[in-house]
Image (tube, rainbow, N blue to C red; front, side):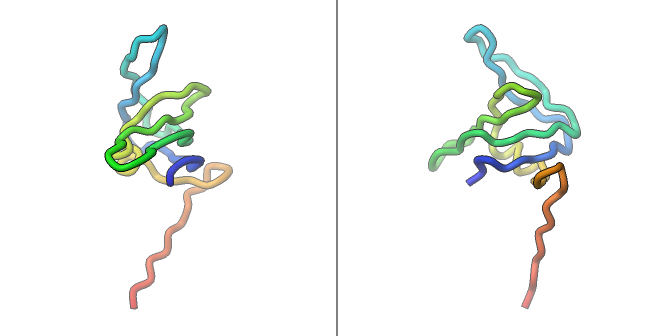
Length: 85
């Protein structure tokens, strides 16, 4: 579940904004901070709504996973430990 998680974008990334009922492409720049507000909701759902600079835009889940690094409160990168036995 991604809802509520924050990510720092590592490369410019495509998102979609709805303005006056029309969708338009926007670019979230390197260093942009996003927060997942909803989605994906089930199998095959490849889009998530994110909060970026005070507005909600839609992104592909793959872009979040590939181009984003999960961060914790205060913008600190979360450390993931891998233990091999």
